[in-house]
Amino acid sequence: MIERLDAFMARANAAYYATHDPFADFTTAPEISQVFGELLGLWAAVTWGLLGRPRPVLLVEAGPGRGTLMADALRAVAQVAPDFHAALSLHLIETSPRLRALQAARLPGATWHDRLDTVPHAPLLLLANEFLDALPIRQFVRRADGWTERHVGPAGFVEVKNTPPPVAEGGWGEGSAGGSHRSTPPPNPLPQGEGEGQIVELCEPAHGFVADLAARCVAHPGAALFLDYGPEHSTPGDSLQAIANGRAADPLSPPGSADLTAHVDFAALAATARDAGAAVHGPIPQGPFLARLGLFQRTGRLARGQPAPRAAALVEAAQRLAEPNRMGRLFKALALCHPGCPAPPGFVA
Ligand code: SAH
Image 1 (cartoon, rainbow, N blue to C red):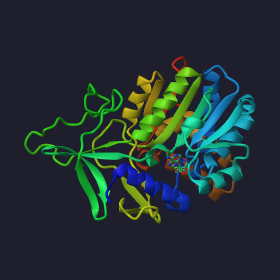
Image 2: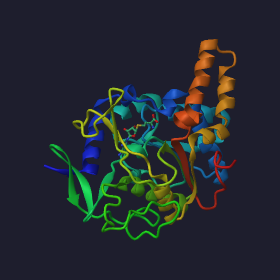
Image 3: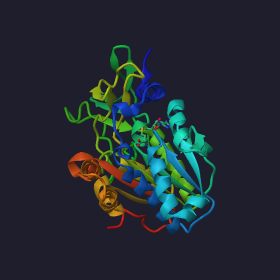
Image 4: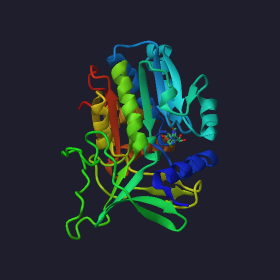
């Protein structure tokens, strides 16, 4: 049997998230510092104000993991923005029954969804950290006689002749007009020896998610904030990676034994959101984004009066999130907003 890479990746991640505590294998921003979730909660509260304080309003998180980000966000919102807290209802998009149970323990009163489709159409603020990188990708390989698509067979990758489909205007699909923020696939057939073996990736579920969300943010006052890792401009190349037991592993390890992720093509997703009519801000690096939201001020306030080792740990956690050679540059922030909404916090210098 051979299956397309995206089908393999979907199956592998469903099995992995159903059976593992992913956070034993890797650490995400909300697990590093409570300030991360607090700042994102306040981002949602301020952006709600910019949208004209619609009520009721949905606060939605995609891929909430252990529920840490949202628990920190709601605590901060309850203290600083009680009006927003009173107006919101909580919706969580999560497919893993195991993680849903962890989330339920920390976030009583939430409503769960498998997909965005079942979230009611209403004003919303959506947060998603390291969600898009888990969605299944397709990979196309440029060969001398045309494109192939990577499939997974019993002995490893198998290439099957197939041409990349067109994606939204601005993605890299054939027929896109090209431009500085796009990585258009190289023309085929290949000029002798050039670009042989080059891989381009396409994450169709991410484009579908962003297109649906952008349309919702146009139809009702709404905004969404994505944080994830990926380059600022679309770049060809194989970014599929696997983590098992805290270490890099073979992406084709038996399904369920490793967490599979790929770089998020923010520029292509931004183009998809713009095509749907949303205002797009970013992508910008996570470091300056969090710094503008007050990462270091809030950390300083928390650290004050704490025993020295605890204070040092809080500062170290903030540095890990923001320093360029750690998570501050590779991770990016991207916001989609209702077209009438001014630039949300963190995206204005
Ligand atoms: N946001 C959390 C967790 C990141 S891990 C954090 O920052 O710590 C990825 C999360 O997305 C997990 O909760 C996983 O179960 C969820 N997820 C992965 N694929 C999904 C899909 N297709 N639909 C919904 N949730 C998914």
